[in-house]
Length: 212
Image (cartoon, rainbow, N blue to C red; front, side, top):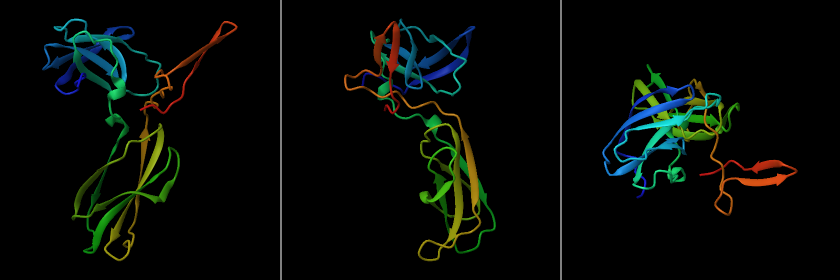
């Protein structure tokens, strides 16, 4: 594979100017150039194999967080963007944690339901997971990738071993306040992501979200 994501690690991040950040890193690839991505957007790269520092411009007005990722690429491909090859980012997932104490002997599992969109109420028909009860203690569950910023609601309901679905105990509702980057811009049939048009000196940029 041309782009490698393992074997590289950010060791230091700091200001390099009023609107610039500097990233220092370690790598196991002395024969490759290195790139820095904000999400899946290429924001900087090294130009020499020996460089271990990348400076990039930082827009403080953007209201959503973004994950910084390092990549190692073949010499001569520092400016080639590989972001479209990356998977979805772990920043769009959240861990729910809760404790179980004093549950009855017939306790069987936890049923986890969720809302279908930010700001919506929990839909009891949207059951994402049935997590086995294994005794008193601490439990955790990683959400699916969430789309859109806002309040995502989850309901954790303990159930016993009665047929067919188990009697429900007192439920706990958890709200995740998420601030997520928007979806990628989708590709056009010609492989571009943006369409440009000009009329009377006004340039219009057309695009849509939903890229992969």
